[in-house]
Image (cartoon, rainbow, N blue to C red; front, side, top):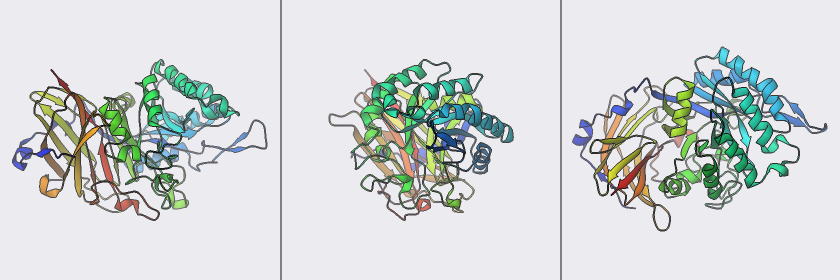
Length: 455
């Protein structure tokens, strides 16, 4: 992998890094799009149809979860309970009123209606409904009509075409919901040996609904489980630094999609069911993982940020702000945007990271050890990747801000650039092993800036 050119620190110090400044009221808002409550029910199968059992998969009320989110610094969250036979009625009659109560009790947190959608021909995805007069009815209709486990015989809704039909329907809805694929490689059996979710399916799903299915969990939940981090239970296919293999591997499946020009984003969340404090595998929302969205404190703008990739993700509060700008002449682009340049033009990447001035939920103030600048473009045998790793000798640090600037080579046609960093000395995240401490293995990942060479 060819290195990129690091500019002098004198040049880096002269950059303005204006993207960190408030823009039309926007700022980085931390959130979580995958949280379970008491309405992720269990099922009494001695009756027909099965009877829902409250608190079957989580003991917490939606109000409790919202209070935990507020306690851990979240500005937004999505309530995403599991489905099951006729669970749409549980959503309508119980989960929806509980959401209204939680919104009244915790108005400081923007709370979205949604569910963990049981994907036909797949596993799970976070379904996020746009707030408004239609939200209860819209969520009910999607679950009732398309959710795989809504019916007793799930095989009747378990084909690829069933998922494509659901996505086409959602693409046509107004307002459009959002969907992120959850823990995509959890059922994989080895590196690149896919299970219930394949890269081909991800592409097909996004092609069917490009404004609805917009990404996947880069870092799955269940990070507090010390036996199988993220509950990635197939030992030959673990997570890496807490991140899914599709994201963590440079030049892997995510980079391949980006090199194709796909606007496909990554997130991080808790997948909170039962907290580690009562023997569960989970952290509370925001306690360990955060998805930051550049948005106003407005539900519609948060959805807009999620839809268009104004996102970075982090574990353990390693950072709490990220400005990334690619410049060429007067043209500027930030996360989720596209920089259009002349072929062979000089491109400068300017990065500013903000380090929290308080301790994280573990009582630590983690140190950022290195940052990787990752550039890619389409190649003959998969994406062609270039990586430069930077340490404290390569950046300026002042008043909690880390700054650096560097040249990025223009792609032959189309490409992208993204950054990640870690509290470890690992140049690539190591495979997670039983017994490791997640607080000692922290990472942040940006979403990409796309670069289109013209002429």
